[in-house]
Amino acid sequence: MDYALLEQQVRELLRGEPDHLANAANFAAFLYQEIPDLNWAGFYYADPSGELVLGPFQGRPACARLPGGRGVCGAALTSRSVIVIDDVGAFADHIVCDAASRSELAVPLEADGEAYGVFDLDSPRLARFGAGDRDGIVRLVKAFTESVAPPAWR
Ligand code: SME
Image (cartoon, rainbow, N blue to C red; front, side):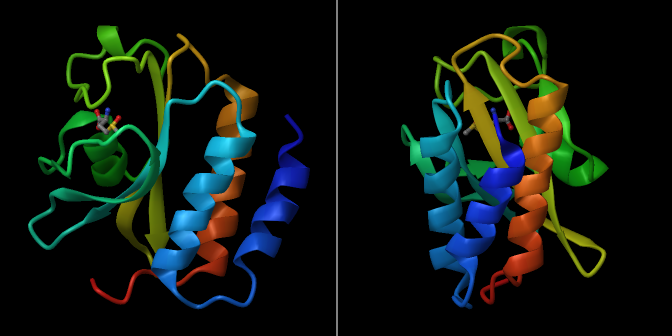
């Protein structure tokens, strides 16, 4: 995967549009189209209680709300670190939204020193996200958070 090229394309896709929702929808759709072997790509946003609420995504309908601090996404939010799970079946706290998912990558969304949500990718392949994909996808999410202000509804 040429993540440098994808980063340029993401920056171009997001340029000039201030609306968070429009940009998040396009970002999820772009990654879902461009990165092979995904069955889900999308956003969750922290609400004031710490729960994660579903945002724009591509793939099957997903859990609308994840309990605070739980699951792969909750762990990424509370630890503010990128989480890669090679086999979701072996990760006890995984929250199943689509039974087809076998591996997962969750990246916290940060602005002004605060984590406001998570971008999550699921794959039907075990260990889909190697070190190169992890770094490349983090780079794309960074391009998103640098280009797009946090949502105004928060
Ligand atoms: N598996 C996630 C839940 C979100 S879905 O994969 C879309 C988790 O454990 O947090």
